[in-house]
Amino acid sequence: MNIHNHSHYGHEAHSVHIAEFIPQLLLALPFAAALVLYIFAAVSSRRYKPWPLYRTFFWCLGIICALAAVAGPIAHRVHTDFTVHMISHLLLGMLAPLLLVLGAPLTLVLRTLNVNLARRLSYILRSRFVRIPSHPVTAALLNVGGLWLLYTTDLYEAMHRNMLFHLFIHIHVFLAGYLFTASLIYMDPMPHRVSYLYRASVLWIALAGHGILSKYVYNQPPAGVPKAQAEAGGMLMYYGGDVIDMALIFILCLQWFRAARPRALVHEPAKS
Image 1 (cartoon, rainbow, N blue to C red):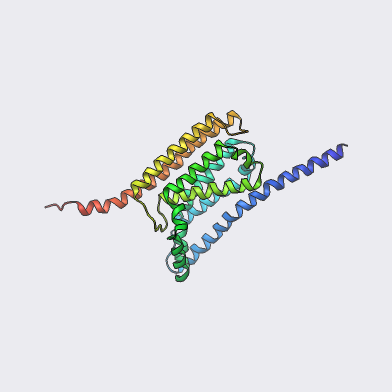
Image 2: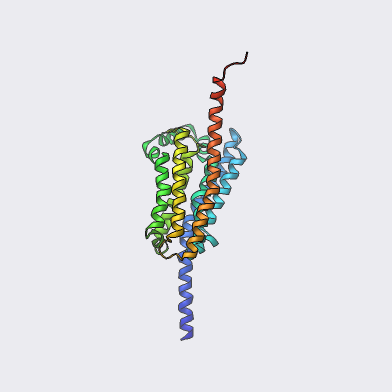
């Protein structure tokens, strides 16, 4: 009887391990491939013009943050600890997207591709298919609105019971965070640009929505989350998000300042 129970529990533990390993592998592989392809493109572009080393550094660091969120110890504990889940959210949905946007991947791709392929990619970037989701308002709704749905409905609990939900939500969190960041700070070619004031306004509203959600999570834990973990996770979401948001605000304001300074100098009356 004891041997049978030991075999049963061993089989159950093995099944749980496989169930955790598969989604981690599926989520990690695209990031690992993106790292290899980026480095290959950066090396290839040296034939024409050296690619800035700091951009490669940002890209590598962003990939590391994303991988830490979807595979390894953090990914293992997100199912049982909401505070760890929130660390994963900050890494995958906020910090990794910011670092990867700073890597300017589209600029690198356009520099590496031949003329015909680069023109086709530019055509796609100008299409409605890209214009709508990359608009700051749409990106903010996908990003912050998606988090509201995740933490105020049964989606959070369902994510831990269904592997497809788990994969979909993680992919959405990352892509929405990347689109939101890329729509606010233009590191890559962006055919459909909006003004700095417009982007700053969208950012301000999005930050307010994120901050209110973190307070809501603190007071109204998602289904199945203990109160203590919800409080710790809500605080981490609020203050940790603020740190990353401050970096985003700084970059946007720096770009705004640099863009406005030449015009100010041009209109400045000449000294006699």
